[in-house]
Image (cartoon, rainbow, N blue to C red; front, side, top):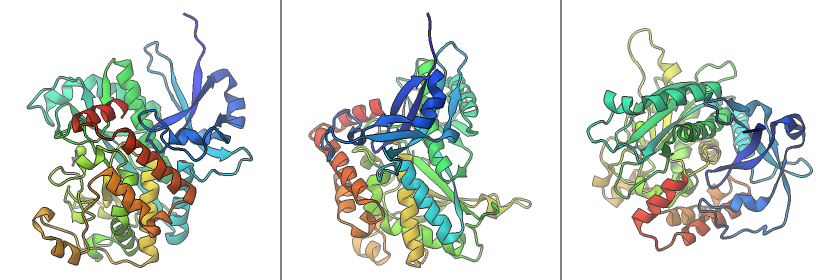
Length: 437
Ligand code: GLU
Ligand code: MG
C-alpha cells in the first residue's frame, strides 16, 4: 500500500487532551514557520466531544505554532506509521500570545518563579494506569509475575520513551488489579509538563501497536484502586545546585521552598478543580486511598496532598540532591501544564505572603473533628467536581492567579461537562472516563 508520512502539531487543552492538526511531513519546514490554523472554541471541546458552552461560538481564528525543540519522532519499527508530533503554542493571528494557551501560562508562571526566587523547578510526573481488559489476575500486585505479564509492553514503552527523548526511571506492576506505573527522570519546568504529555501519548501509542488498551482515568470503577498523577518537585539555582533542602528548616525545607509549599497547600481547595478535573476524580480524592483528601503536608505520608519524600540517608548519599516534595492531588483528567501552573502560582503567592511551613500531619485526619482541623488550618478537599468549581469561582485570590478569559472558559467547560454527565450512575461515569483517558 502506498503511504506518505504525516506529522502533527498539537497542544494540551482543558480537557486534558492533546489536539491539533496533521499535514504531510514533506511540508514540515513551511509548517514549522507558519503553524496551523486553530479556533478558540476548540478549547471548549469536553472529554465527551460535546461543546456545552462557548463564549466564542463559531467566531475567531488563532494559530497553533510548534516549538521546534518539542519534536517527538518514534519509529516502532513494526511497519506502523512513525509517531511524529510537535507541541505548540496557541497565538493570535498577529503572533501575540493567546491568554488561554496552557503551555504559555506555565512558561510565564515558571518565569515569575525564576524572577522571584532565582530558582528553576525540576519536576517529574509519576503516572499510574490500568491495562484495560487485562488478565484481571489477583495476587500479582508488585510481583515479578505481574511485571512479566506486561514486560513486553514495558520494554516497547521504554524504547519509545527513549526515542522520544524521555528516560524511563521505572516500570512496575502497581497495587490495583491490572494497574501499572511508569516514571521518568525529572526535567526542568515546561519540559517536565511536556514530558507528561509525551509519556501519556507514547503509552497509548505503545498500546495501540500491541493491540492493547490503557487507561489513566483516576477511577475505573467506583470502588477500585485509583490512578494518580504525582508531581515530584524541587528547586535548583542557576548553577543547577539543589535549593529545596535545609536540614535546619521545618520539615527539612529551605525558606523559599517552605513558603512555596505553604502557598500550594493553603490555596489547594480553591484550585483542586484544575489539578483533578474529572467528575470521577473526586472518588479518588477520599481518605484511605493513598491519594489526598485534605490540604495537608506529610512527612513520608502517602495520604498527604504534599508529601516530603524520603532520601537515602546512608553515608555517601547526597540528601540535598534527592530532596523533593510530591504533590498527590492530581490526575490525568487535567492538563499537566495547567496542573503545574496552578501549583507554581499558588506557591508564588505563598512566597509573596511569607507564609510559614504548615505543621506536618502524622495521624489519620478522618479521626479529627472539624474544630481541631480548623484550628490546624487543615481543610478537606472538595467532594465533587461541582464543589471544586464553585470553590474556584468563589475565591478571588486564586481566580486572580489566571487570566480572566481562561477562568471564564474553564468554568464554562467544566460546568458543561458536569451538566452533560448529570444523572449518570457512578459505574457508567467511570466507564465513560475510562474510555477517554
Ligand atoms: N494509586 C494511588 C493514587 O491514586 C497512589 C499509590 C502510590 O502511593 O503509589 O494516587
Ligand atoms: Mg504509585
